[in-house]
Length: 41
Image (tube, rainbow, N blue to C red; front, side, top):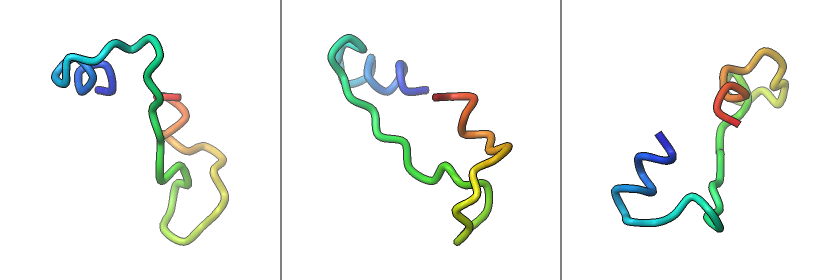
């Protein structure tokens, strides 16, 4: 999805910075074990 978003804005992946927010699995929990977010990092 990140590559699609960059392509839509006509930006190159090379040199781009991507910020990922909300890595924790549950709201208001700072435990990120088994988080599905790691699949895209």
